[in-house]
Length: 112
Length: 112
Length: 112
Picture 1 (cartoon, helix red, strand yellow):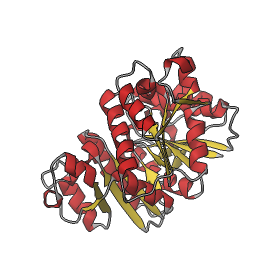
Picture 2: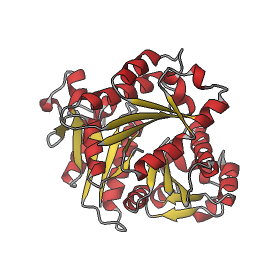
Picture 3: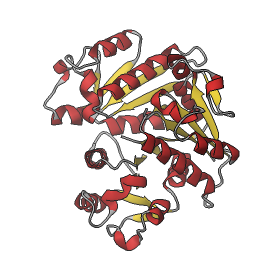
Picture 4: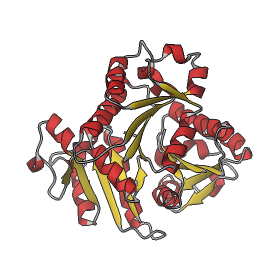
């Protein structure tokens, strides 16, 4: 199965919760996950930045096979580019279009 | 494709973020959107009111073809009726039933 | 139709809103609901506890046929077990896997 997490909040505790829930899902032996992605936009993009508060967790989860996708609109608005993001984070045209496409393609949607 | 946004928060910054994300989706040239709707209930209904903080944005997005649907339960609870809402906002029996029907009908669900 | 609510917030007002929206959905005569479930994890699990702020509402909604499912990861992390929860609340391996399975099975997802 495939699940996309939507991360939009600037609250650091909430960001950590979303990352923990994604990690727990990848470790849950009662379900076979083919893909887990975290799609961030607005203030939720902070942990994807190289100097972000939870960027070390993002790096660990990338190593564990979880995907991270950043909204290009948000990057433009915050004057950021690929080089500001943790290596391995992908960019998508917009968070909303990405999550629309994923759901249309059968992915579950979770917004903790 | 079709996407419904769920707006329930009373936080004005969050309300603005939801409206901006909906607008960005309608402008995203990488996806062909047939319908975009914002379904509001509880405190999230504030921008749909004629005197709401972001009601001007709601008017602009209505002109751009985005649909707005207000939960009747919420209107009853807040002692509001159609005449208190920005012209063009529709009412639905409940936000939850509307979003259940839309997802059942293949719409993607986004709760920024 | 079938709808799963996702409850993760520790905010007591928000918790109450989620329970009210679930109740309103079960009472909405414009839609025939076969199942309504509230899946809680992280701080959202509080109302499921016997001594939780809104546990009386959870008891009422259980009587009304709404299902409640608690994330086992969260219970472990908070050092809680079944006996700490309102009678009738089920436990699931993880909130995220449960909500992935439910969506894969055609349930709508709501995160007020």
